[in-house]
Image (cartoon, rainbow, N blue to C red):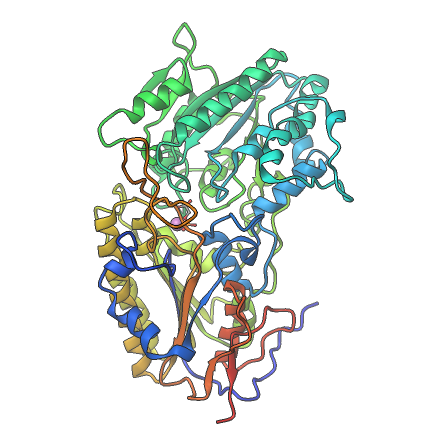
Length: 592
Ligand code: 3PG
Ligand code: CO
């Protein structure tokens, strides 16, 4: 059992208020016109960098530093906040699914067996984000989950049955591997019918890339059909408009998905998904993120794949936040968020279990990372009164993700989490200031109240507006974020506290797709390609405030430090030694 008592820090005093600010989507990149943080007025953040060289540095926020499969994987808020809160690097969903697929373990699990029970007479439905963004899902994992092939061809299994191939080979290869079981399953256990419900991306990948992903999937399904498996895309829609809402911001998003996927009803009907995506994209102002819902119909105009009694359903996203709501709709008998009209009796499994506390969904193909003993839990158990706040679209980031994918309080007497309702039904370039001021005000109030030892906030602007690809609006967003940080730090100054300002991953600091040399890549019309996604850039971290003793500064010997080093740093600033197995603290206390 865990010893929760943290030893006192030998050199750092207790009882200072610590403000922890996470600027979402705020990386560090060279100064050029597509760096919205650079081109925006951000005097406060600029001053930190300029004025306190020993108290400002960069840390890694992507790839292996946050538990992702490769160094080509950009950071994201889930893995970023997990690392920030947990102080250690856990293999994340993307990686766990890769392992489970490569080793074949996925088919031995309870979740797959449960799904398989429907193969005899029902249809297997796969619902999820269709791209290779690697944030919520990956196309190659879906592909592998589709195809039945001859297993004997594979010779590149490593010692533990883990495939030792590069990513490109893996996706080719995985096409055969997974469905080996899911569809060898298919032939042996009778799964003769598959329906895929796609959500187009354009947010973790370039806008417009949806067409290529749908074509790739159609080819895979064609191969399957040749093998006698009746397999089709059944419905679709843009991820931000259909299904993938989060933190209960707007249930209408999930309802639109439900109507198309389960009821087979949508405002648009097409004979093929490629046609659907091409036509809907051609509408004025259309983009992949916000495509309206559509269903695929047969020659009699009948939807080809509604979900009905006796079917199996897998939500293929490994990331939790944007699947929890759909999981509730698919699983909960008692449910009143919207009228489901029909609640089919299905066997439902998530790619992962999305919420360990709610045990949701109760069936899943791959076990999620077990992120235990987070800094939040340690601190609360050592008496640190904690306040956390953001607006809805990022609320779970500083609570659920920060606490190791756990919802709720560790100790409701010592903690208060405040959610500021996000605007609903807009894209955030329309309101780029979002709720930055409101978050700043709530944090300020909490700091001045004297009721809390840690005040933790996420300021979403750089990320949420950066994802729209609107450069002008992203500048406004960055300015607003800078002003909110300033408000919070002013309050910290007033109470003699300490601040830690950092970010979870890059986004607003680079808004254009570049070649390896870092120059903007032009498309065939000679136009730049706007980057709506996150980046591979490091993020800044700054410490300061009147409560920070003058002899505390960043260590010089941790060049490779990343987000996971922040938890020990924050624990130290509260006057405690961090748990031994945490990634080392970024700070040192010098003698002078
Ligand atoms: C999203 O879900 O909005 C994006 O895919 C990732 O953004 P986030 O990791 O910053 O939440
Ligand atoms: Co983001």
